[in-house]
Amino acid sequence: MDIITTPSYEALSKEAAAYVSRKVQENPHIVLGLATGSTPTGMYEQLIKNHITLGTSYRNVTTFNLDEYVGMSKKNHNSYYAFMEKHLFQHIDIQNEFTFIPDGMSDPQKECGLYEEKLRKHGPIDLQILGLGANGHIGFNEPGTPFCSRTHVVELTDSTRKANSRFFKGIEDVPTHAITMGIDSIMNAKEILLLVSGAIKKEAFEKLLYGEISEDFPASILKKHPCVKILADQSALDTSSIIA
Ligand code: GLP
Image (cartoon, rainbow, N blue to C red; front, side, top):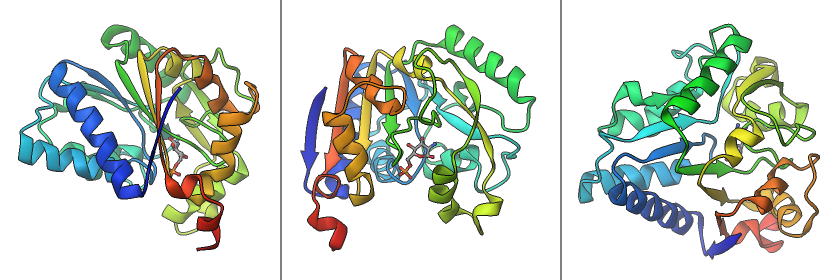
């Protein structure tokens, strides 16, 4: 794993966006795997800036998002569909029919099969962006998920629901289930860019770097991927930033 540390979240976002933009320019038909959550929002902001100032075009780019909450309509502002529209898609020239996100309102099991079919048809993913859950989850693959999993329905852990309740009125409003690309579906990507930011991720990051490869810590599988780049900001490394 190639690890790059940056002094701040802003620097991480700029570095990540520069990397992704370069990849898009090199391959205008690139297939990107996209993540939601707080970590990649700065990168998306920079990608929009690069699109406007450098003219990076997404016209022929295909995207696959990692996950969606079960029972969440596209219109709900907490859906990952709405997230992607707000933070990226509505600001760039990407074509709607080339952006894939699991449909939270479809029959969940059927949707998983359909999503895998789409991945087979339009994939493989050239560059997968990932965030890191505080419990080591990637996508919504919670601890204990088999490494061989493909797109599937997960029951979210209490810790993940609690972590994500910051976007909802309260924890009771956070869905209990989600559809997520599986660990094997993620590992199928040709290249992975993992973004780690904030003191809250310090423990998970340490575990990723120094811990063993185990299904109890989903992100640990990344050590087996031939092409992983990690961008981490100083606060994800610093104990002092937890106090600050
Ligand atoms: C969420 C998402 C993940 C994301 C992770 C970390 O629950 N399903 O794709 O990477 O948790 O989120 P954040 O970047 O907000 O810390």
